[in-house]
Image 1 (cartoon, rainbow, N blue to C red):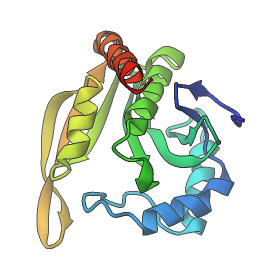
Image 2: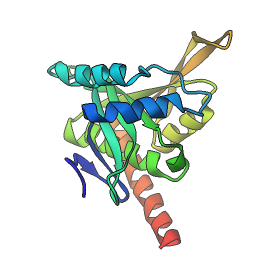
Image 3: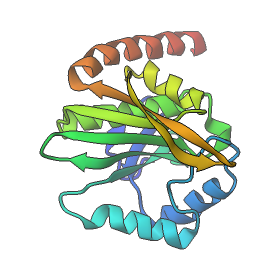
Length: 197
């Protein structure tokens, strides 16, 4: 049974993050196999609890975080977020993370991101969203491009990891572009459902 759903897709739904999610978030972060994950979020259960509280403390919020849960059994598998929300200019940074490695590469992340974009553009009427991707993480960059994002720029040598400075890629998506990309996304989902069903 879905618990407090905000956005519902074919296989996943989004609900507000809860303090009770902090323990599992910390476990996912500690076991992260992805070498490109850049740890912008805290790693301990206490820090995650504080992070969740802070997300809800400001009004209007500058950060909206959702838990990504499976519809079939309510299992919490990751998060999607809107960061740095600018309510005047109607912009925000997007983020997504499927923390449960078993569910990566199976379409759950794109479905959750699609629901986040529907929320951003249809529910809270944002004009533009952007994503910042650490340059070696070509998989994430490709994933957001498939959602309709376009390359917007690069921040040179912003992050140091393993003794080297790395660039950040910036990709953006306007509401009008999203409307066109959404139809293409829905077509791909329908094709996948036909193949699987």
